[in-house]
Amino acid sequence: MIKKKEKSSVFLKFNGENMSPSSLTISEITKILGILEQITTDSAEAEDKKFTLRLQALKSGSCGVALNGDIEEDFLTKFFRRVAQSFKENNLDGFTIDVKKKLEELNKFLKSKTSWIDVFRNEEDTKPLDTIASVEKLNLTGLKYIEGVTTVYGKVLWLGGKTPSVTIEIDEEKSFSCIISEKLVPFFADNIFKEVILHGVASWEPRTHIIKEFKIERVESRKLKPINEAMKNIKNDFGHYFDNIDNPDKWVREIRS
Image 1 (cartoon, helix red, strand yellow):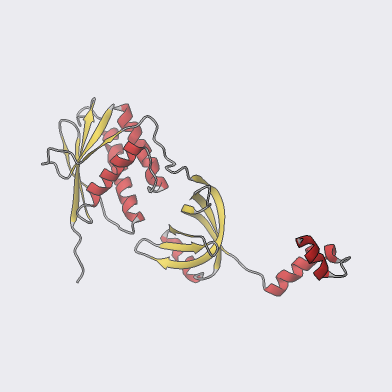
Image 2 (cartoon, rainbow, N blue to C red):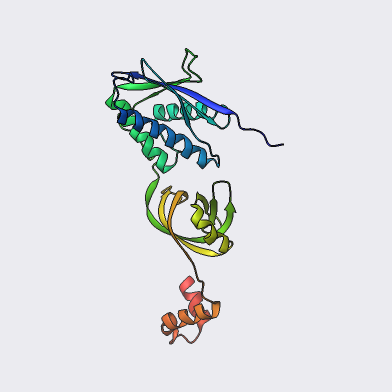
């Protein structure tokens, strides 16, 4: 039996100077609603979930935004409480790169209005579950991951998920997973358990070099040369260095000692 999705809801009350709907411009209201939509739907997709966020109501007084979506009942309240805690700790570790950038926009908006957001389960509640307050400078790097354009060589281990994802093995100890666009699914399906080259933007931990996130921009198959051809190339490139060695075993023992 397929379990029907429950309707998740949350009520966000924007408090502070000039925060009533009549004091905000249409573009400001549209911008903040767009930020709320992207950070919730992107975070759901990162958990292999998908839903549509809907505006239930826009309340007068301090700007109140009632939101809902067809997903686990407590998803939205848990998510915004997580945002509140991340702002308090000034650590966005665990959020995707895109969500971090949108949270930075949210922080700038709250700072510009000298405002904060009270998070309620619904608009009838009088006691907030938590409060999202702006910080002077939001730490986007969390645990100080490095982000940059890079090329990754690896083997495709897995392909699947409602939101298409792949797992890439870099070596016996390191692998990572990332979301891919639907147009890349045929490529990875044709290259399952094969070596590929990925070009894109990576976020990795500088000490261990473990990739935390990867946004693929371009892919290509990695054509491995047969072992006899590889050995022939090594001989051509480096063989002349060994021409004057009469006893290879003795030479190896000497350089190891």
